Every structure is written in C-alpha cells, then in structure tokens.
Length: 30
Image (cartoon, rainbow, N blue to C red; front, side):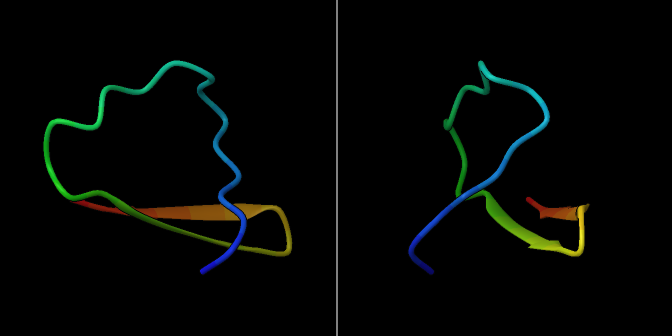
C-alpha cells in the first residue's frame, strides 16, 4: 500500500476508498 494509481486525477476521499491496480486494471472498493 505505497502507491495509488487512479484513472481520475481528482477523486474526493470522503469515504474510505481502497484502490488496487494490477497490470493496468484498477479495482475500486468503497
């Protein structure tokens, strides 16, 4: 959990959001 890669540059972190990116595929858990 060191680097976060997001397709959207501006994402409000109001809730606990966990992004897991593997091989260019990003899975977002809210």
